[in-house]
Image (cartoon, rainbow, N blue to C red; front, top):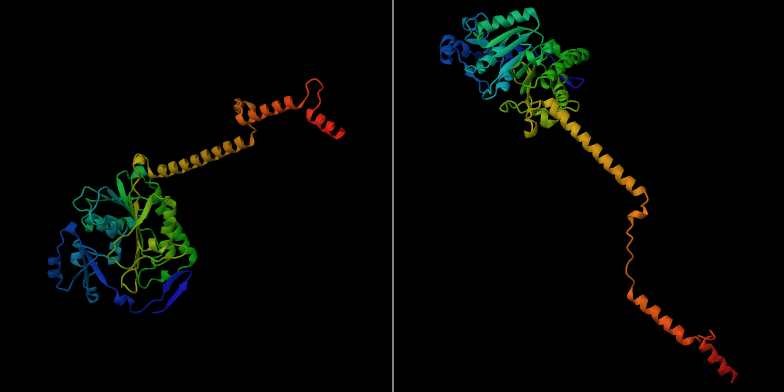
Length: 393
């Protein structure tokens, strides 16, 4: 296998044996009452239960021609043919225990992620709202939901996710966004050599959709973003820009820590400590469809702003900082004016300090000397008169 680097994106040349080495998976569907022991008996094959995804089984590649879309276990809904990496987004969103609320699945066709979400929240009062704007793909989505016996849990809408407003989905608290992408993670895909202009257009759409659900829906607390792409421009770079747009209202959460392959740090993408919170599947080394998954969690507001939506909380904090700067500027101006303005006489205390006793005594001595050394009648110095008399004699 040879590698080429094009604009920071690793592009792998097609390996002729890669498709043969690809691992095969199927998901047991609890909505249809599937049971692992029963499935094993019917297939009479060596099945391995996956350690990362509950109800996921791996079967030998040689068995792929037998267990296909026309198999009775698949058509009746007991088994859903789904790649392991495709199960990660729904699993990351739901976590170990679902906290409640409805879930929105954007760009939901063909429906594997929607039915996986429905299986994971089985027994709760929550619903999955599955959207797709393409009529043909929407028909496939509806048929897949019927086959999985998930119609009671999933509501389908022929709708563009970019046209959604909060009043359209008032009870939704979590969003799974798997937008259109290059598909470069699919083994043998020619999309690994897409032109940079096409990748930039895809990344622009992906960022627009992700930013919308992170900033325009106050009731949404969790958002999972996923692609079946290997390109950084569609993955880490989109996450980095979306995090900036949230202005601190959302944070990246370390999703599915049991999976060891994490995101990649780049200069124009995410730093290492944030990239490691994302998940990657490598199509060559993991022998599955290449995938990228990132989980956003809303940051809990402080106690004094619980009644405000996150966007207003941020604006309020910014306004408080601006007000504080203005106050400090005005205070400095007043101090400068007080220094430059001369002080008036009215501000100087008028009390005269008491006379010093020593000074008064000296003045009294001087007065006594003057009265003793001068003749009051003639006004002449007696000392000088005595000196003249001595010299004349």
